[in-house]
Amino acid sequence: MQISQNFDGGNIEVVSAESAHDIRLNIRHDQDSEFYQWFYFRLSGARNIACTLKILNAAGAAYPKGFENYRVAYSYDRQHWNRWPTSLANGVLSIEITPEQDSVYFAYFAPYSMERHADLIARSLQSARCSLEVVGQSLDGQDIDLLKISSGGSTPTKHCWLIARQHPGETMAQWWMEGALEWLLDPTNAQSRALLERCTFFVVPNMNPDGSRRGHLRTNAAGRNLNREWAAPAMDAAPEVFVVREAMAREGVDFFLDVHGDESLPYCFIAGVEGLSGWDESSQAQLDFYKNRLADLNPDFQTAVGYPPKAPGEANLTMAGGHVGHHFGCLAMTLEMPFKDTTATPEPTVGWNGPRSKALAHSCLLAVGDYFDSKVSQ
Ligand SMILES: [Zn+2]
Image (cartoon, rainbow, N blue to C red; front, side, top):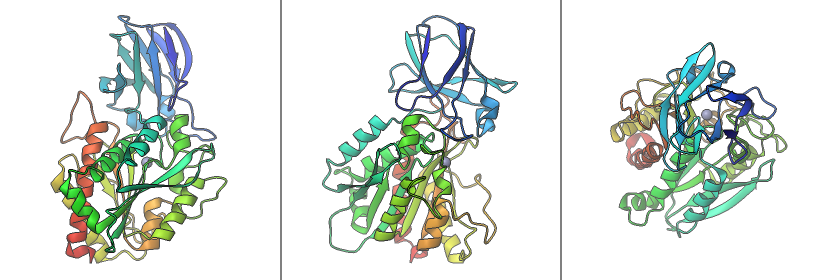
């Protein structure tokens, strides 16, 4: 019996594995950081053996509530990820399973590897609508990819920015990006063609390639939480944010969506930047319009549960949404999807997953078009 994690996005430490009934594991911390929660590992040589896998340090994870009522993602073929129940007792997360095959993978959520990211960029570039700018390099020397999606027409368009995976363990955010890019670049889709006549999209499918490859939950190679770096990013600590901020300043921003996952809340929801000092009725109407339209378009999204809005003047300008909303005065939002499942529309076999994240992206893009058609955006 073997446990391994030395692959793209892998994360686990084996404490002891003397008996199949008592496999003791710890999740590794992000580099130079207290954060941890993402795990991804392979169990092999345990076919038809009743195993108990115990994550000993679950209680000290960044969001311990994320492990309450949690069902782990597992896969035999690395394509389809199903869910399996876990139990939480005395701060230890246990998975009792008898693998049906020689090799099985477990992960906090269906992984999205840097190899898949490279495939996504290369495939997107086969479309004449798509161009690439490498805006910089991460601390580990990986490219920061910015895709521009445009109809190529000469009429002025709204500049819409979509970014994902500032928090690398939130892999649903990049599944969302895969859905968004496929939808925008589908030559047979009349809706995306119409949208691209009015909007140009600037897309950063992965803000944090180093954290993604290293199997981090929340930080880059220097232990920085990128979504707290937007006020004054330094090139030697958070170059990912520095270079994307520069590109935004150059191109302008009329619409901004930062895509994330939430460990604890079993809902899809949007957080606005109500705490900005310039927030007014018009800003509220724009946010409400977008959220309500998205809820109409996709029952997986809802508006009843989310983060409580910040009081006036309390906006966090170190976060991407706060920075962009403040600096560009446009509709700026954070989309959260669950690690668990949606409460009103559950799919217990798979939980929230890649395909559902991709489908939500389609609805989010349709809502962008409706937003710019509406009176509130004028
Ligand atoms: Zn996040």
